Length: 327
Image (cartoon, rainbow, N blue to C red; front, top):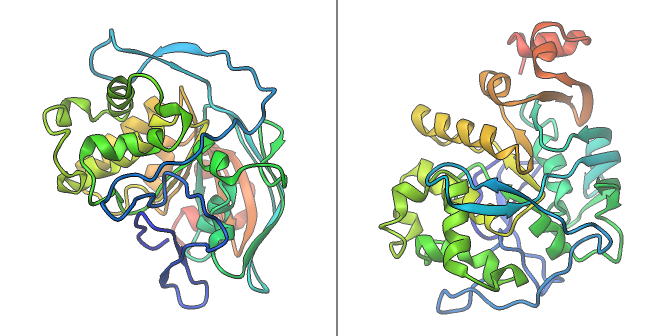
């Protein structure tokens, strides 16, 4: 997938280039899009509701990742995601072809496959970003804890709050400080009520970034290193307490040291959220994923425990790909 920025962007399946698009039909934008006014401040939005109002609001208390062990945060366990006969189109061209796939709660699932096989398109369908591309559409079901996020009654902004996304290239809001980058999503939803300072600190601790930026909160987020910017984007997603985090090649633009920090963070975060990661790095998938799914030409070839996929796959095409014979 091509590099992303705070506005909407998507791959053109015919050219492989990245096109910037903003749907004219949606007056409300998610925190992953660029919700700013002309002076660079976040635009106010009405609070969104939970996708399923009947879902229990009970929480379990966990340490908010790293730093001072006395800093605590109430977080929910992640939710499972289930794809049923998912198809995704660009115009009349099917990029994802009838996939059935389960992403288990509080596990990391890696999506592997050659370029152009539909990995990123499938992931964008999970939080309804695919439909923002002109002429693009999705069919089938995406269930979040058995609740269909494509139900006509569902607020798409609530979907993108519950299912956060981290892109290939770090995309902090360039006109905002470190603090405001994390607080932006909170200010757009009811999550911003209460102690904003504490919530921002909690999110930064959860992303393993607090100790590195606690004295730089008023500085531009774009002034951080590449690895720090990526963790800042993860903190921005964590701030609104998502159930699921989608990661589309989050380490492809980072050096090995920054990549290691992101991988360590992924391992910590899965105790709080469900994680789906798209990667071309076979070693990375082997290191971080509990389960791995292999896609080819828009279809799901095989899914299973990561060790099995890499050492004893059931499909010969999977073996050929993971051993480097093609792709």
